[in-house]
Length: 248
Image (cartoon, rainbow, N blue to C red):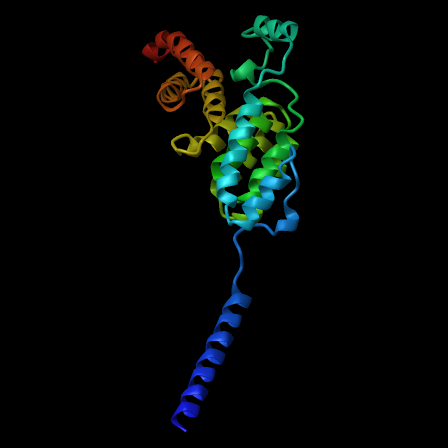
């Protein structure tokens, strides 16, 4: 009888545990997009399967982000196109970008690679901001930038940095540079702020005559980025601004 009673108690405990686990499982909501939402990019299906099987989505999102930066850092302009870009740099009416080859190029895989990173890890804020800023302000593809930000907002609806960049893109479309600078300003001290946004803010402040603000941003770029193109430009612009800031 004692053995039978003990068996009943064990069964009751197992049933209670199973019921609790089932309820907890039904209430669980993963923070990641479902596997069916992950679109293959650049032959990455085997790696994606590994990431899903071993719970390494964040790790593989990091690896894809490195691939994206390498892809964007690969020279795409021909010698003639690069020379034309360099010669037009600084001329009136020329829109200056100051990235690798001033950020110009086509880079057709940039959007799918960017979305792929967020499909693996939608909480990867730095990757989302980098992708959106590059698309909107360097590659001049604002609609694609908005697509990246809106995907990020699906999983981080209160992320103010995404909303700020969306606002900046909207003001850019409306050709309101002062509003763009104001929208970007709260992000400039954030560690996740892409350097191209800082570059844009400095340029807009300089154009608006806010030379002290522009100089402060260029000085910040000098100590927060390792990109040689941005470093050279920041040093050059700071030198140009010395006389103007001292007069104000």
